[in-house]
Length: 616
Image (cartoon, rainbow, N blue to C red; front, side, top):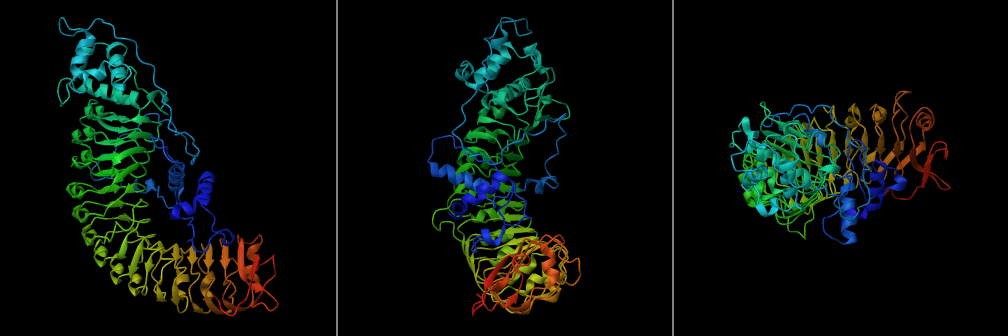
């Protein structure tokens, strides 16, 4: 796999908390640059719950540290389900998150550190019915939720929860009158709800949680950390325990949280399958299990039977199988995150019936052969789609022009696949597009002039394809473009002068094409320009000086080698190598007995290439 080829670099980058350097001396020319402006968070690798091969552990560590794994969860913070899911009130006195090593080497399955079992129940004064003891009354109630064989086994989470509630729970002084404030789901729902939460605590090693404030205490469960209830402080609506050190299997007793709307356990160590009882949570709109150790079907039947669901976030687990056609029945779905999984099969056309779908993440999955085939044209029916990420797959065939009917798209990631054919001119219809990536495919043809309509673009990345013709000179109206990467294609003609009129331009990668003519005199105009790669082309003439003395103060890499440039490197550029600028790498054809370009080495140019008869 391509990710495995980069394991050393990626793991090193993850450990340091930075991205791999773009320095020419340390980068394989066949690899695209690692964009500093694309923020990623290295994720900690998760051990599988069962013994596995060493290479599987290593591959997963690579995948979770891979710079292509998008962890931009803050992207959704401002508009995350805001139309459908109420925002929870702030948790009082939140505990700061722990400091963690972002990419520790995988370790064996964690050894459970169980919470000590409660002492056996004892009868105490209660208002239970005559002739009924406190333990017996509780057992009779909880048998409606859990088999009594589990309740009476104090080695199980259910048994521990039962014993604790029967004998020690300070919040149940008079257990039989707990339901004075009746819940809408029956007179004993409050008791079952507390039992469900306590069972979750024992099942997921609550004693070792990062924050367990209030849990198993005297306070009502609505005051426990991560638990939010309705306005009457009765029914649990949100259970939010992300990044909290949870270890174990999610118990089926989650079914007791009848009013639950949000279940968020992102970034923990929960293993096993998704409980079937999830389907009983008829109000559930957000199920966020991303970055755990879950196994089983990627979209299990329980999820398919939860029509209220708006967001299903399950990326970065060990889920497998194909996406079932029944996914089209989840008509309320807005977010479907299944990246970094072990998917097989084809992408069902039924996904095009999800009219509310806004975010579809199917990146970096493990597909066998060419089973995933072509993209269904029905994707163009997703009029609400904002972010479509299908990179790192084995999709093939041409990109259907129907896809570009999804005109709400802001991010379209189709890179690292096997797409062929040309880029349809209909791409110009995506006038809201800000991030476009089709790099590392097998695409041919020309870059359509209709990209002139994509004035909101911030990143335009099409490297490592077979595009021909010119790079259209259509950037006059662009005022947000930060990254343009067309390296390793077969583009011809001159470098468009309008490109350097974009005030936000920062990363320009035009290497290894067949551009001709002179470097535009305005190349030093963008104030934020950091990388300018023009190497491996057929550029001629002298290297232009800076337009203004204070131009290119942020320039870090200027690659001009393997061209037909002549003359001397202007002093205004050389000055950027000192205190006047941040220029680390300046590469030109200044080596040999008869160098094409004169440049002082190493005070100005820090690497000289010897001119050849051909630029490439």
